[in-house]
Length: 126
Image (cartoon, rainbow, N blue to C red):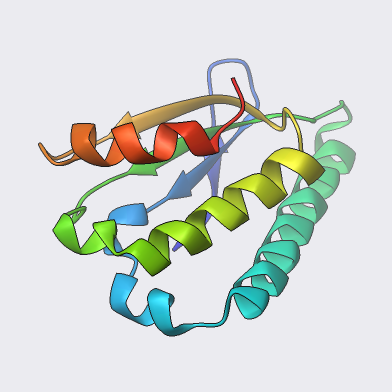
């Protein structure tokens, strides 16, 4: 679950994402092609929201701050198929929506986060 909610100190929108509550078992069973189509839809809706904000506020908005709430993150998130699907989605976003994220903040990270981050940090561009 995710959505735009509020603004950061610079006046840019904040995207909240709750990765820890994602049902990894179900996500592992969803075909990768469907997940990619859903990501295209999601990113198009985010871009549309940024465009609407631009019109409403009368100034350019090209970046957002991402807040990643990791409440509920656990060993179930280490499912190999889920990680493979996540990697494909990250690659899609990195290739097609470069530099939209101004900064990413991780909150409520459980102890397992360090282990999971070691696996997924290589999915992202520097």
